Length: 291
Image (cartoon, rainbow, N blue to C red; front, side):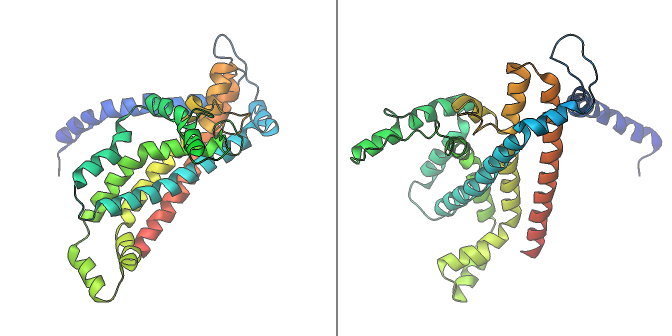
């Protein structure tokens, strides 16, 4: 046991980190709730208006539309992103020639900055002269896809870009998990008559439960804070079809100068994301115990 003097010295080491945490996390959250009940425009004076901002968000429909889009975006990133990363990891875990080269190639997107990725994919998606349009032209199909310019596809097109960017990181995490599975376990499963697919389904995936939880939470975090690709590729459009919570907060605050309403939406987003994250984490932990 530490004596009182040593304990006080150790507490001093905690103080700087605690101050940083309070200054850059706790205070902004509290300020968000505070300004959410004012008519602050970002500058000058403000007055308290109670729950008027929250009432406005409910009537305007911005909050529900942003929540819906954010959930769709996050579900796509989590589901498709994990399926894609796990598939790549299973392939790259096999005895392949130039395995190191392929691992490097699949990880490359994670090294690019967001703006570079968005710039590249804006050309891929571009109607008439983009890569997808060129593929249709080469196939002789009279189709001009405009995935970023249509309400039904703009949100998922942006989400797909995020999965492309993050697939390398998720794949590396899955590879680490697969390499921790003993070869003896796989051989025992084969001796018991398991096919390749059965070994994946009943042996490898259950043993990757901790790894799956990590990647699900990473995907969930990326999906809930979705702003950059929406901002760079669609600007929340067409209309508000791809406007997520983070983008709506940005637009209200820095485009429309309605900081009070933006802070109210940020407070709602904080509570909403916290609840969903806790629920998903508990479900994943329960699955881990069952595996």
